Image 1 (spheres, rainbow, N blue to C red):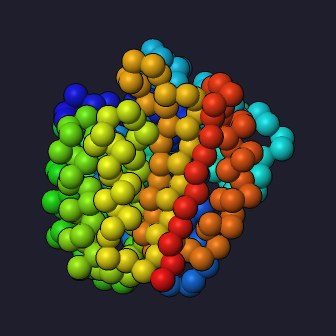
Image 2 (image 1 turned 60 degrees about the vertical axis):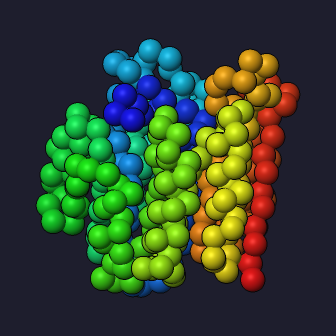
Length: 281
């Protein structure tokens, strides 16, 4: 829905999990000296101010990236993620938070290209401005990322990381995500896909990861982080998950080591927990 503005939630616990995984996946793909694309179906505006405007209203970043900002005991992968955010805050103060396309732009090698989709008219214009300096290396489409994905797969280099993270305010997104993945896998079965989803009490949210596990793929990984016990009234997002199709074989082991630390660092109450599941045929 066009009413969604990611700026309200920039840098929260869900962003930490999403962008931590994003940095880890890009680092893995850089292990091969072959070009690859980064594709983002719901790119947002790209960069968010935390000290004014939408993000400052609820200050959700304080219980997300804010918890990690000054710590000196970060696990290696978490340190890489935090350093990425710090690159957008050269004065050392946590004033800006990079969205997924900016995280990708910072981490990608010069040969990497970005294909970004954003439906919200205001955010898509800001996204265009933010990425204008990259010229042809970044192509921004003001439109539906689900539809746009069909047109660009498979990418010319036959290597790509695709992030799918709709707002899920429209309940149809819960059906569109697995359908988009089925169509994407027909066109490009060897791509790496990362799907973000919220942990909510509503049945659609619980059914989505189950549907993703039924995709016709050889390997997947599903990691969730719940920072608190679900509310008694059933409202609110108490955590989030990342479902990775064709994950690096090292990813599960790395997450198994760092998720207990991250869970403790971001916990809002004693019921904070995480899950980690994988399948490899």
